[in-house]
Image (cartoon, rainbow over all chains, first blue to last red; front, side):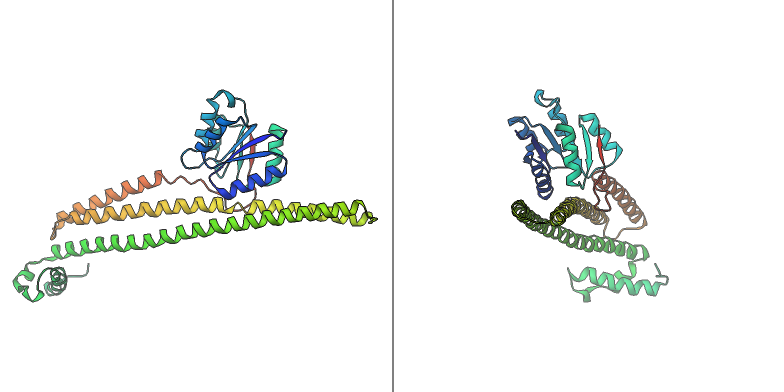
Length: 121
Length: 219
């Protein structure tokens, strides 16, 4: 059975690219339009990996990670940040919130797929 | 200010006061004695008020135009990227389908190993180009964030100009040097406060200057 990934980003075009890249590699991808939507969808299904943006309306990526880590189902699920933010300060905040990795946009589909494979197989 | 003689002051004051009063009473009714009473301070005060009011009105107008253009640019970019992405995905699917047909044909034909190699190389080339295009197509995500930040800055500048207008309106109609100094002091404070407020909400999330793929770090 294909591994499931929750892709959270407020940019429709970016989500389209993520879905395109990961589905081509055989993953099942569910989209969420912001952190709140991501949190709602994460409650209905336990995904194998969460890939989230940082700056989004309603709920940002760091808040989403903290919220997910606060639930039993998501304490061990890998969470990767995929964001334009590239400062060490933000990366440290992400790590402290519970992120397992930091990918700076724009992403290369092949490199994204390799990282996801490394993390969830 | 280059006004130095009483005659020049009187001449300028006449014009300004006439303009100021023309909206509420007949200009012909202005008495020479009243004009003579207007000194350099009052003239300066009037001019300062008009300058600040004008700066605020014109500035606000221009910033509104800037905001409209930016929002329109955002809409156009969004629509363009949607069309580009959809077309791109469709082309990619068509190429994949074509490749599958070619693979099937090769399996049942007596094509040379050289032809098979060439087709494999072409397939790999398509794959590389696709990756490169997907990376490039992410420009809209970044430009929309930058446009959003610029729009917030424009709105903040409009607030700054509104503060200029309010401060100048608060000054007495014919204020003296003291009133002007107080007005300028209030304005400086308002500008400092508004600028600080603006900077605090304008975190720059996009520092990329090219479209090469970004760093990856696993914790």
